[in-house]
Length: 350
Image 1 (cartoon, helix red, strand yellow):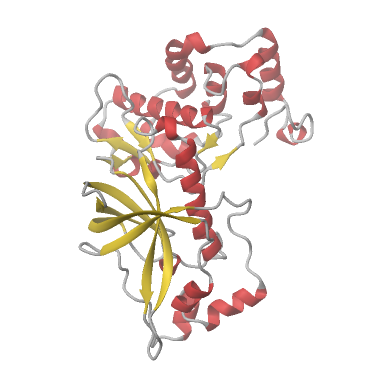
Image 2: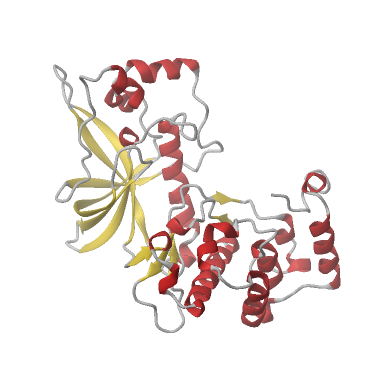
């Protein structure tokens, strides 16, 4: 959006409408299935279009994909911002939600509004990017139904709101913005916590909870896709009865049907959450997720702790035979370029 506004300094975008006290009427919306490509590279025509038309006009010309509208509606009143600023893929706020039956509760609303996103190397076509992010996140939450309230927030549905577009000399038009509602988690992002405030035992418990949550997602055939400290919420009050002390959030980069082939051979290696599959994923040298993302929280010898912690916890799930050990040995020693072409449907490659 900056391209046009920099060329027309006398013009501007309207202020971000997601401020405390703002109200919206939202209608239930079921999006289309997630697309195969999240951010198609724009054509030359579109590259010129973003230089020639005001951001509001671009939003009108490039609405989100249709999906289907439901009959249910809710009233939203914004209580406070969580993350609201220009240049973001989504605006996140805490809201009071009132339903037709008179029930009211406080939830988190995530608005996928392309007007306050911007073009960039990772978002060359922000309208397709925002729409895909919304569809991926809804699809992921629906697939993770069994994990709601345990390792991910409870999902409270997907909605659409219509926002007015008022341009000088023209009749008021309306643009659609998609959003999701989810449980408000009382906690703090791992990124915003100081590891030095936590003893080693608590830091190990947090890392174990992250690994366990990742395994729960994989059991539902979901890969988070953006597992960084910023997307891990540490609960303010630890749950009773041994529940997880963390919740994973932000699934707009998630992937599905992408489990490694080793994880698709349960008769040999056990389920994706078996101890051997888990250790293979998370050990320092071969981790799908770079352990460096969490290295501030790790001042202990990672690999021995990983095996000790999870062999003791999940030993009953261990279903590995001598054949699987041999396969893992071959997997560990073969170069990735070899594994990419040998047994595509059997051997996992990153």
